[in-house]
Image (cartoon, rainbow, N blue to C red; front, side, top):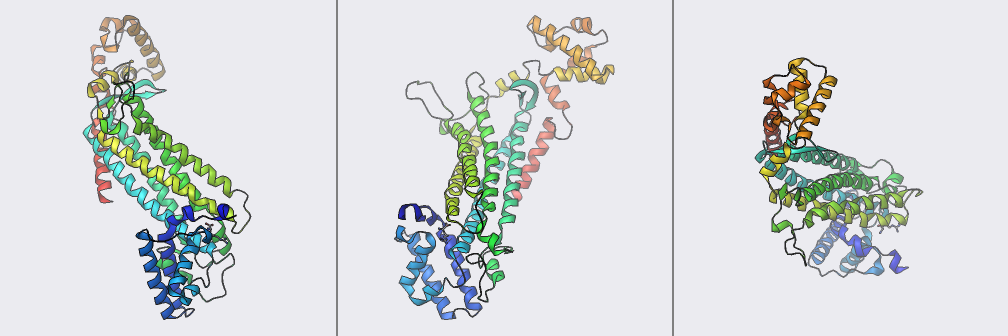
Length: 444
Ligand code: ARG
């Protein structure tokens, strides 16, 4: 029983939040005349001492006392006697743990957000540096059209910005205080829930005592946002792995973010990227785990909910580490500009530019232009050259109206420069977008 029941092994991580909650509760009890100011002063001093003990690693966590709430309260009574035993008036561990856990998740969101800002700054700065550097853009992992390296990096800035938005939405929704809901039904004491909510930085007290102690949707929402973030980081990590592989050779990571092989002396493995790619397995796994714990639970509190903390703690650790490692890799990686340029023009990557030229200059319907371009690509493929390697006579054998002007759109640089539509990859667009992000992130 002791082994399955005790949560102190992991919920000690809530000690700061538990003490904050108790301080707010004690002050409110005293303000409402439920305990005396002397009791409150004793509680305040006792909790400060306990915080010092825990911080110094001198606190003796006792599994026999189940959880962090009982451990701190028992120690408080041991230190200050009767006032310590009055602290739990008009509260239950059910509203206490719900409050502590919301505070913890709120702090975690703030910590994740700060790391995301740093990563987005790194991406935006590198995007500015490479705003005009051509690289192949892919669909189906086949060379599609040239883009710039900066444009590719900024795609992730947009994704991470939405991740921040999701976390901030989750934060706004969780920012209601369950304290004072007591076990499930509220309390007969004349408590002031607005005062404790305000003291703890919540926007308001929760509205329904049953809901307050029995739902963990704030944790699920947080894990969902982390999972989507984890998916973004995992996709980027996968690209770094691909880009670093010899046959691609698009980017190089320094020794700081790679490891050697114990048998193959030439190896430089992108382990950090591979581990970021993998961490999403844990994060999404913990989301599914907690959803499965919560489904079908009758109201109100059930001990099942004690299983809410480890998944949230572990997913937070994985996300924090993944963001930091990605941040490091972004600052470290060196794009191999010549190779990126070479492949940007490979695979008939400017075929769309040719088709667009036929539409724009010869007023050909796009479907016909697509067909003509297809024939020219087949001809170039047969000759083993790219589109700009065909002669004007070759071109005219397929479409007599083609003129010399067509060659001006077949270079990678011309293709890039022409993509000036809103959100397109033209270097001028990319520089503007990168600057916008650098300015915006600077303000945070
Ligand atoms: N350790 C418990 C948890 O994390 C605290 C709440 C326990 N409440 C109770 N009535 N047993 O859920």
